[in-house]
Amino acid sequence: MTIEIDQTTIPSLPLAGGARIPGIGLGTFGSDRYSAAEVSAAVGGAIRLGYRLIDCASVYGNEDLIGRVLDETFKAGVVKREELFINSKVWNDMHGRGDVLLSLAKTLRDLRLDYVDAYFVHWPFTNYHAPGCDGDARNPDSTSFSVDRFMGVWREMEKIYRLGLAKYICMSNMTIPKLEAVLPLCAVKPALIEMELHPSFQQPELFNYCVKRGIQPIGYCPIGSPNRPDRDKAPGDVVDTELPEVVAVAKAHNIHPALVCLKWQVQRGCIPIPFSVHEKNYAANLHSVTEYPLGPAEMASITMADKNCRLVKGQVFLWEGAKGWEDLWDIDGNIVQ
Image (cartoon, rainbow, N blue to C red; front, side):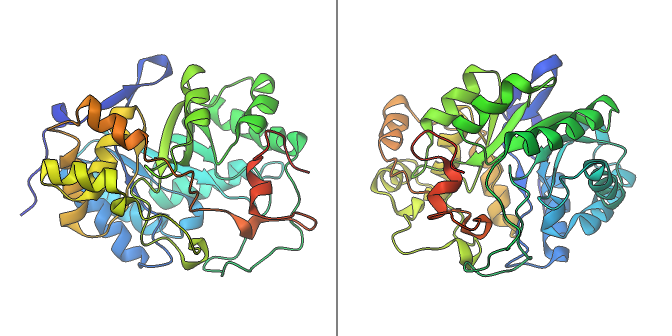
């Protein structure tokens, strides 16, 4: 039987305007491994347990079933709409004039909501790939990053913000050079930025850049995403739960190393969004951040474990002429064209 975790013990963080966002959420990207029915069932179970942040996206292909679960949860009186913080994202093939509104309208219809709490530009490119593609897939229409194109989609995001369809508009998979180029042009600044964050890939420069500008980081792959799509696996990838520093802390606390990764993230000031369809896992994930915090020496040891190992390299978004996945991430500090 699911026992709901006391909401007062779950961390939260402030956003502009006085609202607060839960300090941990449930991810819903499992389409390469799990069915939409399995993912939506996990959403229902997670809400009953005490999760209040659910991270969705149109490209995950499960928002319609998640919407059914949300509707059932509201009708059963488990939670009120205003008690949830629900994210979604516009996919790369919907960056044209009017497309953001169309994309969000479908998301709202699928999720059976009147608004989302946060709406993200999923990737800063119009490049896209077919669901379930392998790592060698390339779209011949892919192009490099363009400030003008990105600001075109951001202006559409600002419109849906002003319409009240999204309480916050946000970005994802950005780099410091890209943010430097677009933030001065934004009439409405992003409230949140999703980025890959875990002990072996901590992105301290990008993380601190966002925090200093009042942009709250959300970390995906917070435990290294062992069930990530095969296209995102490469020789030499670090397994976060096997890092000696993480294992040592886990032994000291008598918990699974995955929970150490989550505790470290939350105490760092990041919002992790781990995904699991298994109740024992998502229950343990939420419960872990409500008690027995890591000590300063333990936090420092995990900070020193950074291996700069990016797992989601994004090579499926490369354009003709790009040298490799590194070009997506502006490794040398300049936007690669």
